[in-house]
Image 1 (cartoon, rainbow, N blue to C red):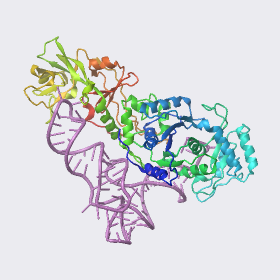
Image 2 (image 1 turned 90 degrees about the vertical axis):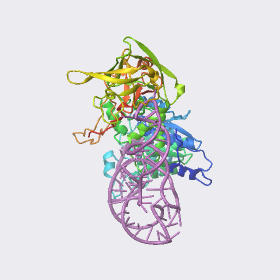
Image 3 (image 1 turned 45 degrees about the horizontal axis):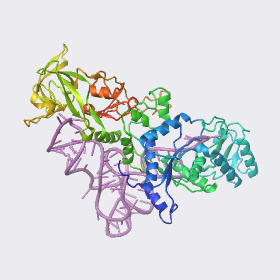
Image 4 (image 1 turned 135 degrees about the vertical axis):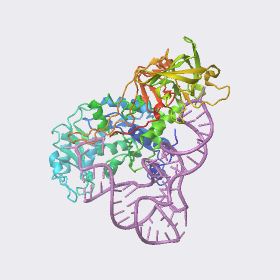
Length: 555
RNA sequence: UGGGAUGUAGCCAAGCGGUAAGGCACCAGACUUUGACUCUGGCAUUCGCAGGUUCGAACCCUGCCAUCCCAGCCA
């Protein structure tokens, strides 16, 4: 894992904790506040890297808090999934797990206090009227209820809480500035009426605080010093500060905003991801094409690779779009170092070793990970009949092609050096079988005579190869909504299709070791077992056959 | 339009008045029992544009341009 370098947030915090600073002497305390209305995606991982990472950098703590102030959007189903994904990534919130809704009682009391101090009032404008009176550029908003006596607002607010009014009939509004250029300050709604079942509070409440009111209070109650969030909340910071200043909270957290993660060709909006799931475009939140944490997991991404990616893209305020290739780079880096290799043939072509005894066989010890000798070796069987990759043989090889062609020599990894002597074709001229002679002196792939063999290819024994059952995933590209609603609903689900080919062959040891019923092939040259079907690590396919042609968007 | 932000290479991103870090990508070479990996070298005379201040500007000032966000009783 890379050591995170100093970023602009750290610069702010350094000032805050310096002698004489806003939090001089205080431990730095952050929080990660997902709304439980969907699964976490890699953008959340960036946020966690910042939230947990910042706390760690300063020897402080980071809380996990479910931001569940809107009962109609949230669901307990997501709470468990969110926790599981965070754990999988390796972030730890210790025993500091909270729900925003845990503070409803306290939040209500603070709202009453606000009314009593004359900083809030109950407004009876209907949603439609509210909108009409919102005002415009240069035109202040209006509310006939702004100067309602304090006692009256207190009483109405209590009746709101007790269910005396219908949804939309009343709101509690902050009394700030109806003429502000920042519309968030034009007497924003603090509480609204919702007769909805809350996933934790049940039917106890029928009024719910808005994010803008609840969030700063929750932060203050938990002793958060730095409330780190994405850029779209910049406009809300004045309101955040207003709430902290005007309510009777025990601390004064500071909000700092950073640019959220964008990855090219990738849908990152939770709303859209939700539609993909609900409207059946994908199998579920963990569909390997999804940028969700669980989707990436199924696709073979490791926690370390995702976290490292998030560390390395940096933190800034300039909106940015990182190339998907960088995520892949981070995966390769991790896999190359840690993954056990195995051989697999995706497009099988028969290779017959004509001078090898028919019916004979032998085993070779093959290293599991050339980068890590401690990973040991596995036994792979060899015989007269093998499968090799179709594009490891060419009838008419171009210059610098150093794999198989008639007359050419190649090394079968860890086995023997073979010379191609010919090939068979079907009536259409397609190559059906390649013929070769092996050199018995080169057992294990060694060259005692010191000769150089340019190419090394992978293979599997046709006699005991296992057929891998594979899935074929296509990219999902944008199909502009014919109704003109969501022009960019799906731009591209994933830049690289998970292309797997029917009939691919895997070495017996791989099949036996994992016994997976599904394989996913990453267009990276890595072959990973479905994480749901197996318990242990990732297997890396022996050669990056498919690396050659990279992704080209078709729209 | 009003408010809030942001512009440094194809993509991220340091830099905070002293003469453009680093990573990804890309190119060239070496090495190699994965054409991978690794290694070596190359890759911004210039920081959105135009002026100004200064011995000196990506950094300070003025004006302009471009892009993004907000204008929910969502978060």
